[in-house]
Length: 446
Image (cartoon, rainbow, N blue to C red; front, side, top):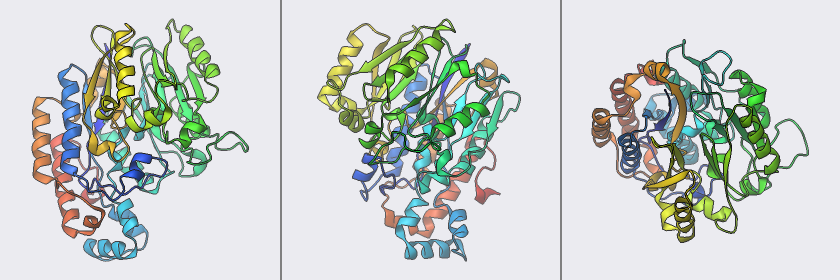
């Protein structure tokens, strides 16, 4: 047996709306609104528990320490922790906000993952994303690596790679620009890397309004690190016009599971070539390809971005059919919901829709797919995962109690300079690492 396990990121205690992510229109639109970290964490936990109750394997990845004092000290702020916070706030509230972002909750950007069935050495490979397009995310790599190594700590089954060098040429946004298609999770599949620009070549087709965060050079480097077979690997370019419409990651406009690729008509540049290559390479593995294209006249790119229709989870049920997990915004949009209703009624592979309220995450620009990292594991690999990282009834109850004890229910950017907040965060995370059995993973624990 083999499973696709979803490891969701838990929303951090400093969750706030600062509009830090240029190119992510939801993030920009809700800048300076009041956030509710406690509600955000509970919404995420409720989704995890609901999917676990439906029989899906569900794990959790903890938030990062924020505000991130190590970076502030590297920038020359000194003295006590309280003094560093005060200096940073006086110098630039925007800087302190960047170093307090809870963006690590979107673990689709944590890393790229390749299952053992695809890697030459028969291990599951993780490459931490460098996220160098955004300052507030580029600081995540070190802690992300520590979390992944503590969660997947058995070297017999798991191989961990550091983030690629922090240069624009090697911009890497992790699993948000990566798909895997296969007949079964346990069997070899075709990995599809989606990039926005080449990274080295000049004069290529690129977006003009918003940055292309993923480079082909970075994607190819990850494929090499993971020891992937070129005959089972495909590189496709994102449509630059879609990026300029707010499609900052491929998972905002496409999602895959097993043999199904659910994508928008405008998702890819020169889609026919890439789709034909996927079909051919899957056929060589004895696997059919089932693309589902959503036409622009039914759901526009703008509506896809506003509702996060494609930032959904596509999950295989016991009967072989698929479940699509979408945010409440997709149900509230009449045109999108009409399309989904017709899709389910058509008798195709997607037979069921589940809707979740993830408003706190959505308002910062991340939906159901942003919140999870997919890891295909066989029975032996699953048994080697840190047991405290898996969601069950008892762990769900403990985590909710932990959130109730430690989280605030209101957060604005000006609250981030409160020295008591840093104390609250560290106490909470120290308790959480014990609850999850992860050991010391944060700088303040060293």
